[in-house]
Amino acid sequence: MTPFTYARARDAADAVKLAALPEAKFLGGGTNLVDLLRETVERPTALVDVTGLYGAIEERADGSILIGAAAKNTAVAEHRAIRTRYPLLSRAIVAGASAQIRNMATVGGNILQRTRCTYFYDNEGSRCNKRVPGQGCDAIAGFNRNHAVLGTSGACIATHPSDMCVALAALDAIVHLQGPQGARALPFTALHRLPEDNPERDTDLAPDELIVAIELPALPFAARSAYRKVRDRSSYAFALVSVAAAIDVQDGVVRELRLALGGVAHKPWRAWKAEAMLKGQPATLENFRAAAAAELADAQPQSDNAFKIGLARRTIVAVLESLAAGTEQPGEQP
Image 1 (tube, rainbow, N blue to C red):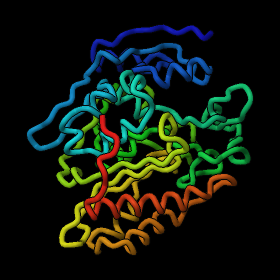
Image 2: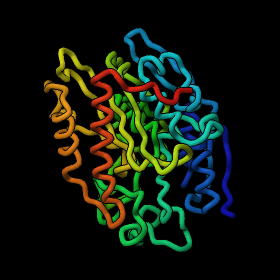
Image 3: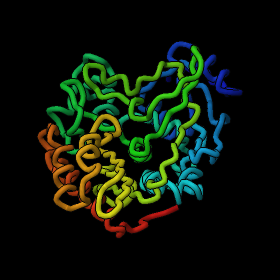
Image 4: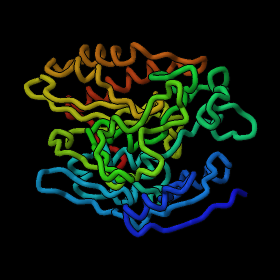
């Protein structure tokens, strides 16, 4: 066992101060970090408990919503304003894990959870650059059916596991941070990193920088949104492909669109190419297919996961078509 200290933070400033210790980790609901401790993938010397920090969900005068990082996933999914104004976020959270885990998991912890790549977890038997930089990546020549097809590198092909993060990427969410140098805000799409040559770095956060809140900007057309998750079984499985989308169609023309993909990259994948192609264009099946194809044009499949490219294209088209036609079903709701 690796010994570690434990401290409960009084506020954000206290949490940042405590996290200045070498190899310190913030502890939220523990639904991912505790697993990594058990597998000796993570070996912190100090745990800073941040579960007692800001966890409110505030509707603000400008139409935005501020969600405290300590808010439980269940509380966010069940919040009336989230369900009515950002239904894709509510549905994404419900699509992930079990009710028991959602009751424990925090928003901040969900965002910072690490990949579920089996080679990453196999601390004793596999090589993994994310776990030990420079060691190699056994997934590339191994079993890689669940791995990434977009934004990969020769060092890592792992995927980001979160459903919630795909919805936040689509919603132009803003991450509010607190660190030793003070507070700062970061677009959610700039938070997570692609692997490149440093797959051990999941985000662009400093080691002792704390997520304190997530801001959902006012986005009226997000009420017409959906999250669709394609997986091997209907519950307790990570996405092979997922799609989060919000669309504004007027007189048959796409006026606004937000689109993000999960299960296909090292980070929640914002579909910028598809959005740019469709904005101002007729909301037709042909255009949806062309945009989906353009977004996946640079995909680089591995030996076992080429199917993800076609699956992602079809799922994008199906979601956009149903949203544009107003036939998207409410689906599973909390």
